Amino acid sequence: MLSPQMSTMRPADILDKSTGASPLQRWPHVSPPQSAAAPKNSVTREVVFSLFSRRRWYIRALFMVLFVVTATLLRIWLDNTFHLHLHYLTYFPTVFLVASLFGTAEGIYATIASVLLGIDPFAPGALATLTTANKVALVFLACSGIVLSIVAGALRSRTDRLHRALELLHSSRESARHDRRRFHEVTTRFNSFI
Image (tube, rainbow, N blue to C red; front, side, top):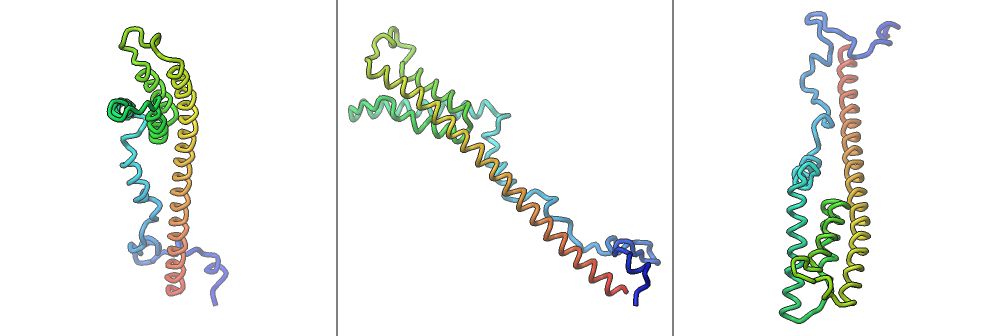
């Protein structure tokens, strides 16, 4: 039967009289918590989306310009090859894609760039030569692009928050699992020591 003093002792309080080390110090095989290291999924995700970081605004701006120019070239090619007057239809998925990848602000910038390229500001009197249908289409493009940017940006931010919450939950589960395993090992050693 254990004495009252020993029954209130914790396993970590028991010292090896020969070395002066506690059981936790004498058991180097006990691994550190896995939560101390960054999960592989979060590291991979950080590497993949490092190009889309807000600190690298020039890369984000470059991708935005490339997407908008590609949409413009596609619209011109469809117009010249198949005589399809799409009234700037190719810009809508481009704005939504930019906002989904980079955020609301970049989606609005893509909308402004799409409207400017649709007007063709380098041609003299381009705005005056626009038909009523083209003007209405440009206004619709601007309004729809802003709405699409807000919606896609909100979805992106919610997705990011969900990923961070899932990573935190995974880390907490790993930490709890390690704590239970370590407690079981210490209890087993303590019982064998007694």
